[in-house]
Length: 127
Image 1 (cartoon, helix red, strand yellow):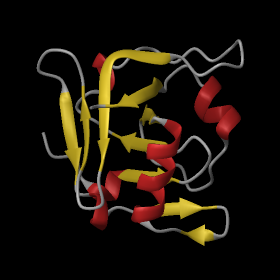
Image 2 (cartoon, helix red, strand yellow):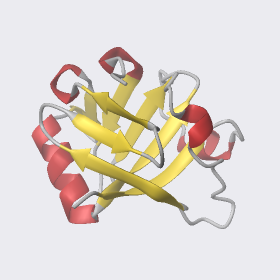
Image 3 (tube, helix red, strand yellow):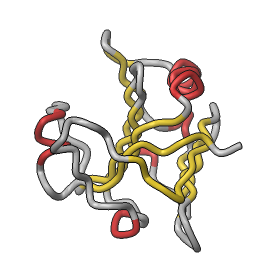
Image 4 (tube, one colour):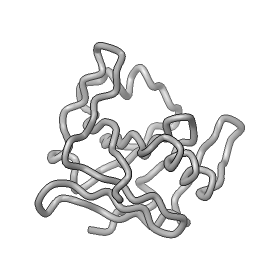
């Protein structure tokens, strides 16, 4: 299923994040529990970070594609570059995929990770 790039935010970092709002895979992703300070692994899920299209593939029929060039990228200094996000994901061996109700105007990681409504975790790069 194609995911609307307007409901997506790629966040650069040592461990990059892919925020998905209203994603078709929301209920299929594991409930997020990072209460121990560790990001859980999404077993059975994989990500393919590419400049033009990012694929998140899950078990069975679950998965989605994001037209990455059309989606916003954020880094510490403001707007970022999709190529740099892909490089971050390659170095990290994957990305944190978080499915949320809506993309927040301000990234409050404590709220996103502890709200009880976010789903996801670390997704490894598919070979």
